[in-house]
Length: 104
Image (cartoon, rainbow, N blue to C red; front, top):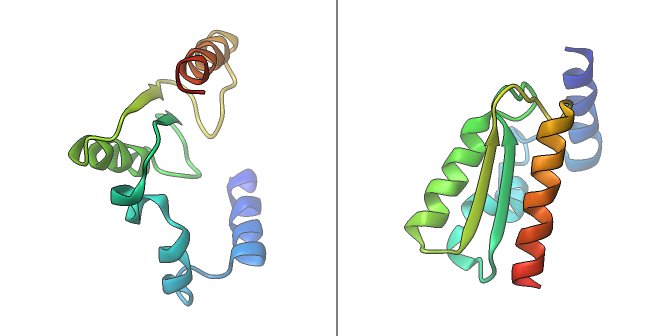
């Protein structure tokens, strides 16, 4: 929980309060601009993330599909905000490498 609280403090310090500055957050939220995305997107998220709920990535993936935007998604069981398990890290980076090799 301490890690989560530090992230909230960082967010508010550098990005502002999302409750008070909702319009600002709207401007830089990729989830609210999916229809403007013009390049393939790789989405990775730990299913046990306690910092950013996995529902955020699921919603993004749903909207990418809706707008027929090329994407790849990896939702990783047993991981939080990042990968701690070596096998999961290897899979993630191999998938990212393949994605970049295909799209760069």
